[in-house]
Amino acid sequence: MKISNLRATQPDTPGSPADWRTQLGQIVVEVTTDDGIAGIGVGGGGAAGVHIIQTVLADLLVGRDAEDVENLHAEMFRHTSFYGRVGLVVMAISGVDLALWDLRGKSRDSSVARLLNRDVDIEKPLPTYLTVFDDAEAIAAIRGGHRAIKLHVERFGDRPDPNQIAQLVADTRASLGDDAEIMIDAFARWDLETSLAVAKAIAPYRVAWLEEPLPPEEVAGYQVLERESPTPIAGGEHEYGAASFQEIAEQRRHVVLQPDINWCGGMTTLVQIYQIAAQHNLRVCPHRGCEPFALPAIAALDSQPLAESPRKWFKCLEGAAQICDGVIRLNDAAGFGVSVDPAVWRD
Image (tube, rainbow, N blue to C red; front, side, top):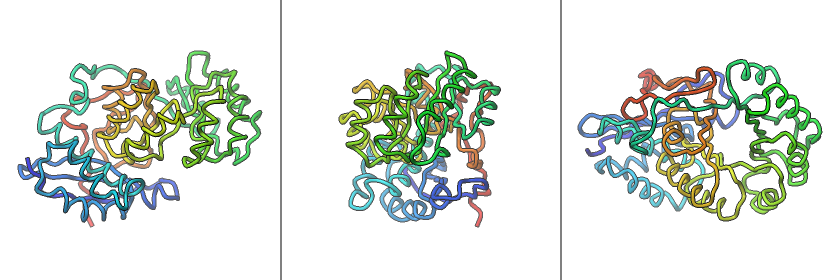
């Protein structure tokens, strides 16, 4: 099963954020083999990611054995290492790797979840959480059956009053009850002093994690925060490659790892991250885990599964599992079980 063609495109995403998440947004990747099988993946990097795939990665992969997924993944990282160890290049590699996993599943008539764990319970409902930006969304999430929510607190500014955030968490805890998980997402906006103050203020309300309070490059700050915070610290959404997560684990910067499978290097990298987490007794909770590419890993590899709500604006995939009453179930179709609207390929 030889690779015969790679192509990629950035589909229109009405309603997507007016920032880099649109300018360098999600791209659809298709890898086709000489026997006519096509694998679908999703990466990132917008037009730049498309260019990388259709030039550098196509030159490397066309004619290669599509089944040799892990070695091809390692070669893509090596081949681009002089200019792409993090960021856009890895986002592009992610989409190609996922397309190769989709091909592997289709060629074996197996879902990716079963490739990862032959004993996976496909029918098992997986708990989900919704990221909410205001009180109205939080109430709607509760009424919709979610038993876990993440409060996005960017609206409180770069130096928020810890008591205000603590009051928000207290009110949310009162609405959800004692059994629900509550998380906080600071969107990498705070400094160390603010982060510690908030972590201490929200500790009485058993917050599952405080996510990305510092910018990702603040390595020393995260080490202090993780050591002194009474609230678990999460991060990793903007990290690339297994080596970055190995450093996070060894330096004990987070206890919850949050890779985005469409950015971090694809399924091959995500499997490596789960292995790293197991070695260091860390939790993995992939970014946007309800989307069809991370969901099989959560079902097959995660001892504490929890899937985050998907991107609302990325709608070109067909067949993706949907949240119902606060849970989501895999389908058992071959590969990732999704197809792409043919309209995305039209000029």
